[in-house]
Image 1 (cartoon, rainbow, N blue to C red):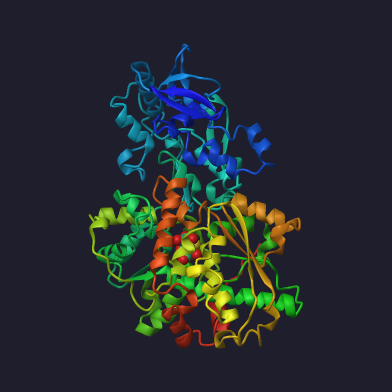
Image 2: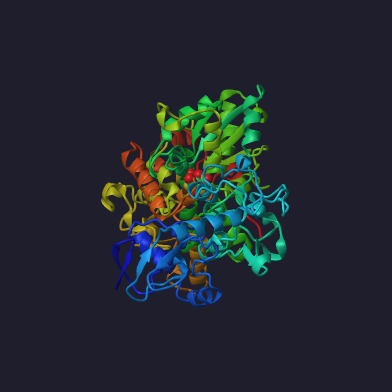
Length: 626
Ligand code: HC1
């Protein structure tokens, strides 16, 4: 290691560490708009594969682009100011991060940025969370020394996009480009032009809706300004709430409950599940349902599908039953496989996502139970995800004769609605979810973290097959081998004994004897660049090709790191949110999907022929085409 001194503090770092990173390690803040903790060299080292590294190094993608120049520092013995993100530590150095010259230079840079920044801060979705706005405030940028554009320089995104780009607010930091390439492997965004003519664009300058974008929103979550935002659906939802003829219901996904507090000043990882219910009723929703109920329903259908595929493949030798089965609840992942790996579409579970399953049973089972006309119901979802807007609008998602979900709102949009209503969320009393979708299991809650869907599926499948409590194999039903944040993971669960086939699955197979002695192999990937690695491994007959079931989540960390979550989101924040979800699971009375009383009731009252029956196929399953 090398020891350097920053602002009088000695710090030992590995050679090659940048001065900016060394300062961060020492807890010394240096302002920057192009660096992001998810895109620092350490994070990227674990994120990029060895084979990809030379390609990324050559394109300069791995290094902070050093484009904003705000991280200027003074180094003893060197005459000028230096951008600390581009200054590697190669020997003992003495660095100052603050001085009159540094402050003036930073203010000059901010004033120059503002001279090209067209946009009304008050009308911007990032007002209050904009990093540029914050720095202008910190550095006293109050004048328009170099002027301001009086008219937009670029057109705004056309209607129809889910990811909205406003290049009038772009500061060319390239966080979005690097995130899309290095974490998602999608390359929907690129930098075009040189020097003064540089701009962030897409292939052939297409609108995002026409580019090979998966709508994951990871670019939005890294953007320092309002140049990237999601389509705002809040006004349409307010209108529905105001309409006396409409019954407006909302379902809340697992991940937002562990994150929405951040928008109200809470520490990351503060779970506000029940306060959120109270708040949503207060702003006018008629019913608040728990998406974790339909996550449990998904596990019943997807678990039954896995057993059915295994039976057809291993016993009936039916090659049409494609293995490994892939999870299908992450809409960014679905779009990724549709765009880039369509040959693997038959591997996708046909189960709709919990969002869509909930939508389908709201407008059928729930409407029937209450004697309500489904055309009067407006079904809204609170999701951590921008791609859920795309999923809700997919043409496949209306098998009940109505759209399963009418509006998918992100965590940020709902936080904004609550603020517009003057609600101080953390101060509210909690209240329960509404019947008949109010019971959740811990399994449904952990869906929001990478590995959660797999853990939920294993708790149920292992118990249904063996007839024994999964606790025999895993202490407290915590299936730790599938947890964690490694980008690609694998785990094995041996089936040493089998029980009789439960009544709910009796129409699918006569017995489980064929499973005795089988070792269930499962895989996991989060961030679509890791999904790509898994698919390549499967294609090449590598270890993951021997898996029976693989969970894929488009966003780093799973839904808790979704592109619709509060900004900022980084590794530390994802870890805190995961802790909150696993904490809620650990304290839940019901922790397994097949023990959820509301799920068992819907199979008694509505899907009476069980999972994978004609009716469940019609409402709870779908097919994705090339
Ligand atoms: Fe997710 Fe899912 S967990 S996809 O990550 O399967 O968005 O939170 O709601 O649908 O339950 C997202 C989260 C979410 C669905 C569930």
